[in-house]
Image 1 (cartoon, one colour):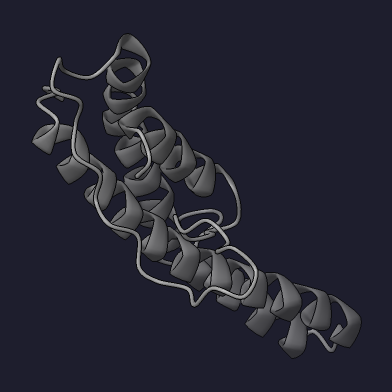
Image 2: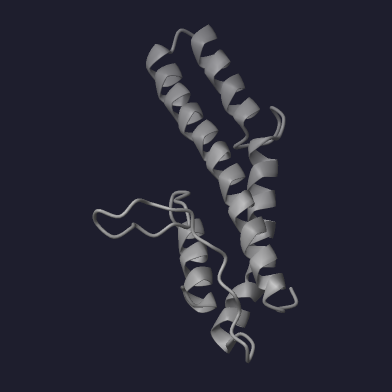
Length: 137
């Protein structure tokens, strides 16, 4: 059984990486299983866990702002629609190389949007764990 500090640290580390899951690689030869939610220690959570839990609202804010920007309309610089309009303009001007570069950029941003959805779910899971441990967020 993992300590709450380790679980939360792993979760926050996963958020800082490229959308990796919270699971830790299993021991060689053992079948992978879903991680169980660890129980909080009987004497309460430590200060490190509490500080880590208090970071969750800031993470949620950053995720929300980033998703809002990507979902914006064609007037919002950096949005998927804005990038698509740039691709359309490049194709209309017969700038095929620029259009290809922009299409690759659109592909990456679309994948980024999917990763942000996964991270939002991870943060929601971490928030519920922190609340179950008694940390007020």
